[in-house]
Amino acid sequence: MKLSIVIPMYNEEDTIPHLKNRFNQLFHDWSFDYELILVDDGSRDRGPELVQQWIKENHHVMLIKLSRNFGHQQAITAGLCESNGDCVVIMDADLQDPPEEIQRMVEKWQEGYKIVFADRKTRQDGFLRKILFHLFYKIFIFFSELPIVINSGVFGLMDRVVVNHLLNMTERNRFIPGMRGWIGFETTTIYYERQKRVGGEPKQNLKRLISYALNAIFSFSYKPLRASFLIGMGTTIFFSIYGIVLVVMRLLNINVVRGFTTPSVAIFFIGGLMLISNGIMGEYIARIYDEVKRRPIYIASKKTYREADSDLIETDLNDAYYP
Ligand code: UDP
Ligand code: MG
Image 1 (cartoon, helix red, strand yellow):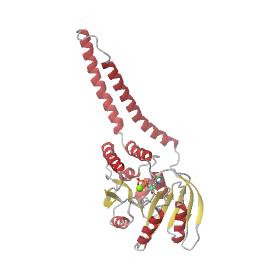
Image 2: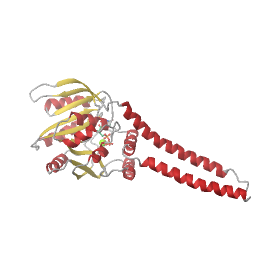
Image 3: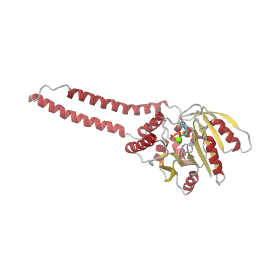
């Protein structure tokens, strides 16, 4: 059996040495073959150099360079594409996902599970992030039409079959935890303590996280559309009845001259509702637009690896990934 480990990295020069140390301790205990695929998502620091050094020391390590910074999910997709193991583990470079758990995941896989989710028991993030993540998962569960493991990020193991299905899914806006959950098969969950970042700063800024969250909701559910439809219906019914009441009152000459309040409140309220529902439709239209453009999900430019008895090999890739 062969295990592939996919690790996206973006300006991770501070964490790569730690990553290397932790893995070097693990490799000895592994009785199976493995490959470690680091995907350089357009780093502008010494991270890739450090990885090249690592490849010189260990020919199981491989580096895929993307042509620019595409983002976390895209970088992972690139790694999955390059992988050829019988099962694949995805994890972050910052050691928030402890690599010691991999052994446990592999054991679960050997028991016959096709997906092993890793669920965070605890989260060592900042206060604001903790709250935002919590809120996000609550909202996601509410809107989503599929069950995903709460608190499960990308960390986890997939069988080759699942990876192939994932790569065959064509969407451009990829939310891998959701897509992986959608695929099905026999799944199980292990629990682990999410660690602090070993070095450097988080590379996913708030904007990226928000767009990740929006993808998670809008790529997986029509509920927002339905909600805006239902709210529209409700408002229409309410104001129709109110309109009838006003006309009747006018005919009966009760309170004929009314002030400015009713019309302005109605206009603002309806205006706001219309803008919101436009925005919700916009989210879907933007996604449809992304799909019809059929752009690749990422562009890979270079692959660095080594055979057991060779020097570093650098090949130019002309890879663009079109599912
Ligand atoms: N990452 C990436 N491309 C990006 C942003 C992040 O490949 O544009 C990598 C990053 O190097 C790390 C992983 O994705 O290995 C998770 O990023 P980060 O730790 O910043 O995210 P968080 O832990 O806050 O979700
Ligand atoms: Mg992190």
